[in-house]
Amino acid sequence: MYIKRTLEAEIAKLNDFFPVVFIGGPRQVGKSTIFENCSKENRTIVTLDTPSIRALAKEDPKAFLERYPAPVLIDEVQYAPELFSYIKAIVDKEKKTGMYWLTGSQQFHLMKNVSESLAGRVGILTLEGLSQDEKNGHAEVPPFLPTKEYLSTKATIATPTNLKTIYHLIWKGSYPKLFNADDSLWSVYYDSYIQTYLERDIRSLSSVNNELDFLKFMRVLAARTGQELEYSSIADEVGVSAPTIKSWVSILKASGIVFLLEPYYKNITKRIIKAPKVHFMDTGLACFLTGWNTPETLENGAMNGHILESYVVSEIIKSYWHNGKRPNIYYYRDKDKREIDVLLEENGVLYPIEIKKKSNPDKNDIKNFAVIEKVLQQKRGNGAVICMAETHLPLTDCDNIIPIGYL
Image (cartoon, rainbow, N blue to C red):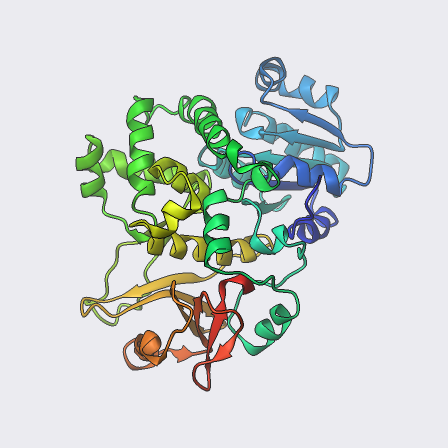
């Protein structure tokens, strides 16, 4: 059963404007599926995951494009970057929109080629796993921002949640294949997913000499989701150099597995922490890598707070990416240990957000919001505590308690 995706509206918009539309994102999040569902014409579908087809695309891209003429969907196009210059020549000659749809799950190989070869000719989108809204049948939703307008919209459609359902969502993950699958298939799916990722994507990279070391690195990093990234401590645990860890983090970031949440600072003080936080975009994958095999053990375990934070950050990011937008999203921490979990910047205004497992936050949970005006000297918008509350409630005149179900 196809699940309606928020990104469909952006695909339609870009398809009417650009000759090429590209969707990047991790494997198995539904990139080719959403394209197929959006197709309103007799469009050929071809995947470069097939070795013989890939060989033709690489060795004779001109013949490949003659065999598979536009309109065409080319899946996993990163395997044949040789195609891009030929696609450019064709679209420049034909001057039509919507000719080529491309997907790619290895953006570390791909994005430079796409942006350089097809500059001005390609609309670039990002797809991640299912958002909470998509799972609940509400694909047409705005990007998250803790304003009165957003809250009034979500109050009418949000699905009630509680501690048990939230941690089941966190544990189950966001890959479409798992959405309606029995929980007993969870470990089988993620084991297969990791093997596919290592064999098809990682094995081709010269910067990864040992797949077992890379898998160990993924497990160590998953245990640190929602925390500041310390390359040296990860290197010590994995047994490789810090520069190697930095390179491997870049691979996971570029393939959509992790997101690095950068700290917010304006060079007004040296007292602000400058290390990014690492967040796994799919919390189910993080749970599998770290051995949390049930939602109950996860909720009661040592990672419960950090993985909840990663889940919320991931949902916020998806709400922007799936609407074709790039979020200006940060966190704040200084050497006086004042921290704000998330800062969203919109039109020069900073919106502070705290993430709590509790259901009854108070004003003490938002005391650090004052640094926006006093320390950062920036304009502050509405703030929020995203938590386990059942409904949204005012905390101050400009700050609200927001249920996780509103994401």
